[in-house]
Length: 122
Picture (cartoon, rainbow, N blue to C red):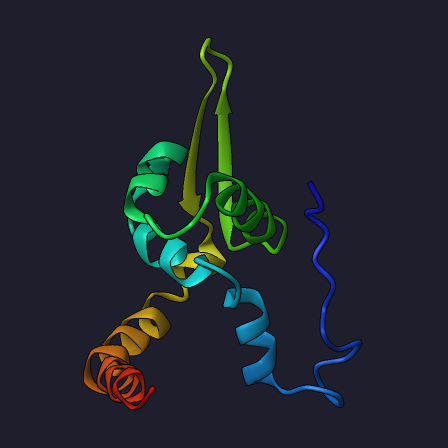
């Protein structure tokens, strides 16, 4: 499985901007939901899978690896049989809580109505 993510820009000072850099870390299938569900919690893979019904186990694994590689989540493996793996937000990941709350609020107020309106036009 290819878990090496390529950045869109070489330099986020010139080619991109801080907003784009932030979206690059949080963007991706299910990453926002993963970060949202890990706020203040430690969850195992299957607990996350149950919360993210629209994502395949393979994609969830890929996104978790990218989030870990980017330093937004921490993964702890217990030497047990069967293996036990837990995920939690890192300090940098926890610092996104206010951003996630703002996105949730905006989503409820604006994004869902816009998407519903868009779906009715199709």
